[in-house]
Amino acid sequence: MSKKGNSFKNRVGVVYSTSDDFDYDENEFQEEETLPNNQQKLRVELDKKNRKGKKVTLVTGYTGMTKDLNELGKMLKSKCGVGGNVKDREILIQGDFRQKVGELLSKEGYSVKVI
Image (cartoon, rainbow, N blue to C red; front, side):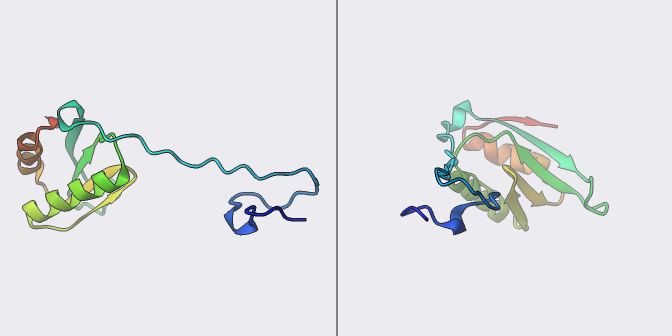
């Protein structure tokens, strides 16, 4: 007996339930509102761990929606002229661009700490 709108495809982590009264409760992920640039406290640091010795500029501490984080990452990658990625709420820029990224973020109004 399945309830309308209670599709098994949406049940991540639930294998089987024998209860007739079982109602799968989806805890929808609510993203935080994006803070204004001047309230963001970002850290810019160099990272080489688990990257086979290659250097990566890492931007952490962003509070806001994933869409806005992706846009910021895209802007930084294009201004630095290199590749990178946005994952796990962090922006990865290939190479050592700490100073340049710090300056770009400061011009955008972010509070930046370069490590």
